[in-house]
Image 1 (cartoon, protein in one colour):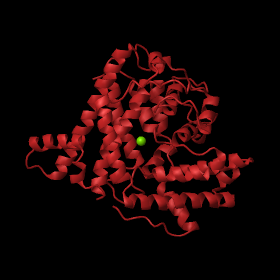
Image 2: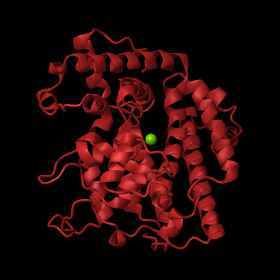
Image 3: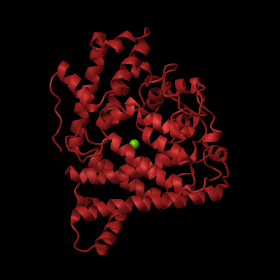
Image 4: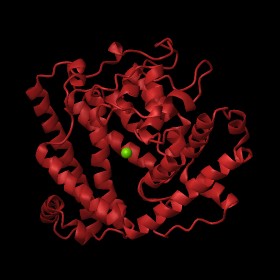
Amino acid sequence: MNQPRASFACLPDASRGRLHAEPDKGARGPRTAFQRDRDRIIHSISFRRLKHKTQVFVAPDGDHVRTRLTHSLEVAQIGRTIARTLGLDEDLTEALCLAHDIGHPPFGHAGERALEEAMAGAGGYDHNGHSLRVLMRLECPYPLWDGLNLSWETLEGLAKHNGPIFAPNWALAEADAAFPLDLASHASLEAQVASIADDIAYDNHDIDDGVRAGLLDFDEVLALPHIKAVWDRVCATYPGAEPRRLRAELIRQNIGEMVNDVIGATRARIAETGIETAADVRAAGRQIGGFSAAMAVTEKAHKAFMYERLYHHPSQLVAADACRTVISTLFAAYQANPALLPAEWQAAMPESAVARIRHIADFVAGMTDRYAIARFRELAGPVDLPEIF
Ligand code: MG
């Protein structure tokens, strides 16, 4: 059932438009501006590459583990549920959820850190800034302009879904110079919902993947009081069910609790601040979409546990080291010898030193895990990654 649109939703018909004017009613179906944005993202090369980019586990052989693509799909599912219930624009939320990780390099945060170091002389690297660069410059499927020519609301939401930006990095500053995104104000509620949906998705799916990988001991996960409470309820409801079914039920119910909390807390903040329009959301001076204060504390403890036990697990740290070596070796090799780059990247190599570093970073950041590993093997030999799956 479609919920009526709330007065504070972003309406596609009231969009601030696209950088390059284009007819909005084409022959390819009656879609709103935000539906078109979502579809452009789904059809992009960078979106397909998310299939082989690390979420938590590097280049997994296991077919059941999340990648950045399946993570993005789970974020979109959660984001759409919240958006629809709150009366927000579901399509804009979905577009933001699907694209939120599109600027991630191979190997997740290990890859990001290696790129940051390699780009120290060229303003550094930030995956969010790079998302804008991907969508506004690097993807180029259109005859007349670079980028996907997305709506202002989609670019704005991606740029600042985690809050206002007062000191934009170079990539965001370039995007903002080309198409001013009001970086210092808060983002739309659709973007705030996409941001919290990201947290809900990985907080929960990483328990599943961590236990499957054998890195998380499920009994230790039960040391988290909020997880234990859900677990006790699930076990009482389904006595004698197989543990793997109970664990799936636990994850399902915990996602549901977090989603309900966000819906309730967001509604309460909307009422409390008297927000009536999308402009009010941007001018509110605080995040409106998100967890209640109590759930925020619970979730913080959850993340702290996951950092300690999973993200910083000794075998994950070994993998991260190997990944940083892959990225820094490739980067240095392309810098020393640009002839190693594919022909079209060589042909497009800019003149200035800073632009050359950014050009090489664009190429390396676009790599999938397996592409980066294959290029490293050609140049330097095998990559020593822990066998997990
Ligand atoms: Mg994410």
